[in-house]
Figure (cartoon, rainbow, N blue to C red):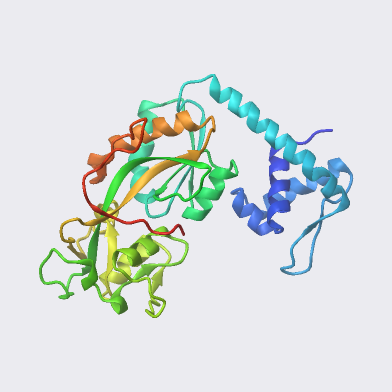
Amino acid sequence: MNFTLRQITYFLAVARLGNFGRAAEAVHVSQPGLSSQIAQLEARLGGALFERGAGAAPVRLTALGERLLPVAQELMDTAKRLDALARAGRSPLSGRLRLAIIPTVAPYLIPHLVPTLRDRHPALDLELHEVVTDELVSGVLSHRFDAGIMALPVGEAGIEAEPVLRDAFLIALSGNDTTFLSGPARPESIEAERLLLLADGHCLRDQALEVCGMRSPRRKLNLEAASMATLMRMVASGMGMTLIPRLALADENRDGRLRIVPFAEREPSRDLAVVWRRNAEAGADARALAEVVRDLAPVLGVEPLSRPAPDGPTDAPARRRISAARS
């Protein structure tokens, strides 16, 4: 009987999510492609694996699907153990690495990271994914990703993290906005009704609210953007103000449409870290990746963070750092 690990992966994704469309998104394939592979698996097994519901109703496992589920999971666990054995016999960053990066970091880091990795580690097979924080953490824990780059804190016991960069926040306004005639400014001087935010799902949204002390549900903030680029265009058009990480400044203000105001001393910032699943074989890759990312600090215009000492984290320079809830 012939079947592939790809088919088993797709089967497990549909079984977990109960929806062919969401499963296709989760494994980064088109829905027709996923459905075709499932159909081939069903043909080889001699029966349907899922009961297709009408409309948006979730699909359910058939009796055959229920019998296949534990076997399929065991097959995937075995494949992961084989992959771990292969990793153990090679040097770091010389095989496949499935790396997830949050959207407020990926566009600014990737153009520098990828060429550097190609130069230093030509044997690396890099697979990149841009996902929000919750998806990144769950993906690392579920073996979907080998490592991730995200803002601290992690908040999950099964995740290791190595801080790599400190990314300071600045205030971004339109060129003719006279709210702050001169800097530096203080976080409490930002007006809630004028603060523009990224939509739910982006950790930078919670970080901006925490910096400005706006956790009260009584504050109504109803102008949101799906991406950093959209957010900065909203600001440039005079719709309000926002916080911009220094990491994003060169790209998002390349045309000089924004007026940038720094914060007063002890400026707020976010710490970015490389993360991986605790006790995973990918830990060696993740630590090597952390060194590469840390070395990019000068070209990125941010502050590198020293590698933590074996007995605890390094005491970094005093700054007003945030500890936003994951989102």
